Image 1 (cartoon, helix red, strand yellow):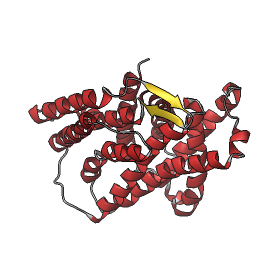
Image 2 (tube, rainbow, N blue to C red):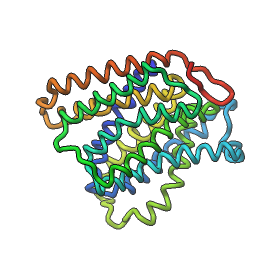
Image 3 (cartoon, rainbow, N blue to C red):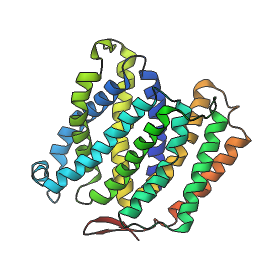
Length: 306
């Protein structure tokens, strides 16, 4: 299947995760929810990992004996955990609209990190990033209530978005020796190990509604579709089409979110001319960004764009 179609599926699942995560906060804290979805996804993947591991790839035991390998995955997983912690912290003093707008900077920040890794970005791609950010913000403004004002938590979330951008670029750069499934498994392994002590100390486990069936339904969806599957899709797309392709398709997340809202509440009034203009800008941005990522070659240090 085309990497672009898979990237679009990834964006759709990511948008649905925001909807499900917002609903599950009535039953458990975001920190507990994240720790549980990572932990359960890891449990589901472990037997499959053990049964399907390729002989040509590094075994888990061999990988853990490699200092550089462990350090790289600590950075990859740590940056992802840092993003979630930053998000939770920021939302205490800012709005979801603000975080959604700031999130549109992730592809641009990712391109800056890619430059540090020696992956140059052309002028057309930079213009595509700017156009995509503008289109995504336009979609948000026409489909979300509220005004944009700078809050204390916005600076925290901006740092969190930098960590997320680094995570996506680092996955492409440092995951050349493992398959998409193995890469996702290792990220979940290190992320779960990092989150466990924080969940136990700060998760307020006594307030979790463990006996509520709806809580487990939402958690199951978050675990399987928006953690396990999205992690594998992310690994697959970045390995074959580049991190910038995945980051570019993240501009479609607000569009998916607006569609979910319209279907859920049977309210299509938000799909206005402003929404249409923003959608058109996002589509044009994807064409500008993606044109450069038609071929990905693997060098000695991982995938490089050509």
